[in-house]
Image (cartoon, rainbow, N blue to C red; front, side, top):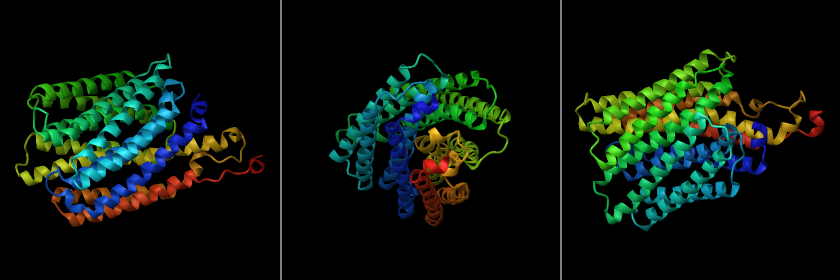
Length: 430
């Protein structure tokens, strides 16, 4: 069923388009970070920093995740994607909306441009939610992974809805509290509700599959699902309608416990793996799970006011977002891309020849050597840039950005190598 779901050429082409566009966006983000390194020093509400953040969250991370979901949601639910046309509509809305939004933030045009961008994005994400929901409803089989995916998209919808309100609030000022208050809620439900919830859902399916793990305790995922969403729902309701600062420790504790249950599940998958050696893609993933503790430590430092210097506190706030978006999420994506994309392209070109010894394997479609270089260059750039952010040193941020640009170039090279792979002739495969 996996092959039948993915081998639909129209679905595959849509997924591949998402991957290519996201890879280009990643390169642009690293380049913008280099040319605007000073924006990472000071308050996080900086026009250029807001532009880079939204390109990262929408044009890079969300775009590639959405493309992956068009492949994975049918696999997890054992169905087919509900609508290709809806997928194309969502893609166009994200591209146009992200470009307009980035321009509006970069030049701080808080008028009709940012409002138009937010409406376009909201329309695209709404259609995406409907498309995935109808896809999952076609299946009678229920799974906790599917629950993670659908719930995460609901959080994405809420994130974009609140972002749309914020875009109009710039001019009309109708929200009951200051703009930055709602901006923090917008960021939290996006990072935890959309990204973290979805990453847990997808990783809990893919990593055991790639490791060829034995039977795992699915109750751990159930605990993780309910604790994460109860904590996030409590935080959202409390923050929107009450003053939840005092109770935020309770919600964060629930979310951290949910994350611990997930990490235990992944550790169990690692211990029960039949595939003893980790390839470079899984090394990306496991390092990313280690790096998630960096923003947690930074957050605890701020929450318990271990450091009283306002300037350092501002830098730690930026460092938290940077370490989540780059150290955790981006590194995870950089590794999983080659597993997923190479398999999609391989199915398009070689599925009917899979039983012939001369047919290449999916891993033969990209260069593992370049993927290893990508990992080392990315980690070097990330560490240097993070040190620059914490120390308010734009020179270090620029140097780190050069490393990230190098990783982006290597990543794009491998993406093109997969996509432009020339199929061997049928005669050569006999």
